[in-house]
Structure formats: C-alpha cells, structure tokens
Image 1 (cartoon, rainbow, N blue to C red):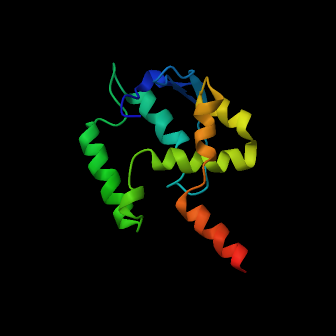
Image 2: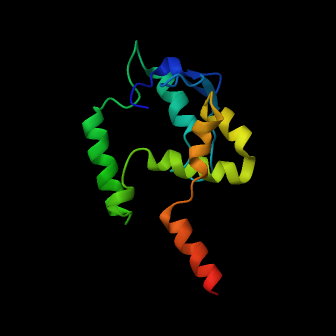
Length: 136
C-alpha cells in the first residue's frame, strides 16, 4: 500500500502488484455518498496531478505502523488486534461470507487456496459468540 503511485491507478481501478508470489489484481475504485468513504475521485485526482513516481502515501512503514496503532486505539480496538493486517483479515472474512471462497481467492490475488483458507479460521470473538449462542 505504501508503494502505490499514479501508475497503479488505471482505468478507474487500482492495479495491485502483490508480494509473496500472489497474482496481480485490478481492484475497482468505488464512489460512495459519504465523502469519507469515497476513494475513487480523490485517487483519480491524485493520479492526474502527481508527477513521476510520487507515492500516494509518502510515509515510512514505521510511521504507518504508529498511525494504525494510534487510530485503532482511538477507535477502541484492542491492542492485540491493532495491526496493519487486521483490516485485510476482516474484509476477507466478510467477502468469503458474501461472495464465496473462490471469488475471494481471486480478489485477494492468492495463487493457493490454502492462503485464502487461512481467513476461514474463526477468531476468539467468533468462538465466544458461538459459545454464547449455544448456551442460549
């Protein structure tokens, strides 16, 4: 995410070159009625005005890490869940529920189903909720 440049914004999509041998994907940029949730227009505007290899998020990994922790803390997210991968994990789990495992695999760019299958593991909160539901 920190390496994104205007070259990654192509035809209204975010062209994602993934790491760890995953497939390259194109993620559509969506507009939303709430401007805080709409990324399409700001990213397209950035791509139009940026020069060269200007990064979308010109911050270091340690700075990004500190900001994620601060924002998650301010939002009341427990410290053990305050990491950069947490949002991807949440989105992947919800996508599996709504779109199925194979579409999620393609969306995430995973070559191996076992990579996507890792998101099927229930969290401690999921297990606690299931126990509570069983207890009635």
